[in-house]
Each structure stands twice: as C-alpha cells, then as structure tokens.
Length: 291
Image 1 (tube, one colour):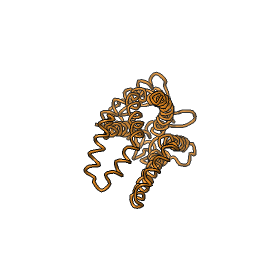
Image 2 (cartoon, one colour):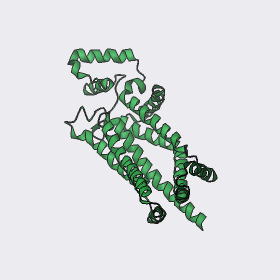
Image 3 (cartoon, one colour):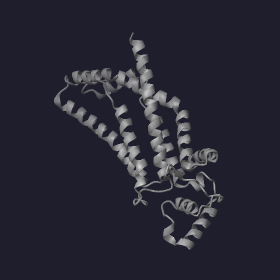
C-alpha cells in the first residue's frame, strides 16, 4: 500500500520538479499542495480540539460524580460526546492519514529514482553495478543506493542523464544523509530547524489559558490525593511524550536523506501558520457566541 501512495506522490513531485528544476523547491511546493488539500481535515480537527477544551470542565465533574463507577462514567461521557456532536475516535482518522503521508514520503525520498523518476529497477541496478565497478563497493550506500547513484551523476555533471535530479538547494545537497555525511556540518541545519519548529508547534498545541488552569485546579481539589496524583502523572506523561516526539522525529531525520527533513520542516512551518490563523478565527467565533 505504501508503495502505491509513494508512487502517486512521486508522480506529483516529479511533475512539479519538471516545472521548477529543483528538488528542494519541488518538495516545498508539494508540501504546500498537500496542506491545501488537507485544510478541511485540519479545520475539522481544530474544531474538535476546541470542543474538547470546552467540555473538559463537564468531563471532570462527571469523573468526580461517578468516581468508583466506571461503567456509569463511560455511559455519561458517551452521552456528552453525542450531545456535543464529538466523535471520540475522530482523531484516529487524522493520525492514520498522517502516518500514511509520513511513511509514503520516507519511501519516496529514500528511492526517488523508483517513485519519482519511475525508472525501471533493472536499469537502476545496472547503474549501481557500473558505479561499483568504477569506484568500488563502498561507493554505494547499502541503505540508500539510489541516493548514491544521484550523487555520482551530480558529481559527473551528467545533467542529460535520465537519473539526474538537481539536489542542490540554497547551498545544501538534499541527497546527503547526516549519519553518513556527518563531517559536513551543513547537513545538520535542516534537522535543527525542524526541532525548533516542532517545539514552537507543541507550545501552540499545549497552550492553556490561566482561566482554564484555575478551573482545573478548583475541580481537582475536590478529589482525594491519590486521584490527583494519578491525574498529575498522566498529564506529566502526556507532556513528556509531546516533547519527546520532535526528538524522536529528528533522530529519524538524521538517518534519512535531507529531503525528508525538509518536507517535515516545511510542514511544521505551514502547520504553525495554519494553527495561528485557525485559533484566531475560532476565538472570534467563541467571542461572538458568548455575546
């Protein structure tokens, strides 16, 4: 299935590349197009988050009211979701879509000659063997053989070759893999920028207003110490997990071609802008509804 999606994304990316003649610029435009297509899903997801924030107080009241009666609590919470028209499993669809995008893009960036240029495997293998014969076995990366082919063609300046892809982007070679090219400090620029953008994105997502914090404290003060400790532990765990995600992702970006890290970085930047705009729109709508 991932090969199928990687093939579709590769076809679109190659079409953009043929227009702009630059791999990095093509990835940026591709990222923007994907985000535009995903706008309806983003709006729906943001609305769900806002609704979930709204019903947090009611959920905490239910937890206090039906403490020790999990069956009744689940029933009441499902009724609350139904009344507010919230699908508790709605976020799963968004996560699945994001995972498909993530893995498909990894496949695509790992093998651009296969999925982007649509070159037959036998032709790629023949080229790999040719390079090995000329420069030795170590000249071809075991993990990213197609990237080694692209590097070779770039170094030879064989721009007319069907396998040629212009990987130079603002002084960075997007065919490089930080783990394999750690001697070149420039390979860490995009991964570092990706981490910074991830931290900003998380701060926007986990931002809680002082009013909501006070309400939460007022409600939790009615519970016994054991339950408070459990909630605090759960909240701390969620917070830790959210902060660990960018570092987990950057560890992947360090062992993948820079094209993948660039895709993630551009997505984060667009997501931050999108979140700021949607937050502003929904805040205005809330103010109007309260009036």
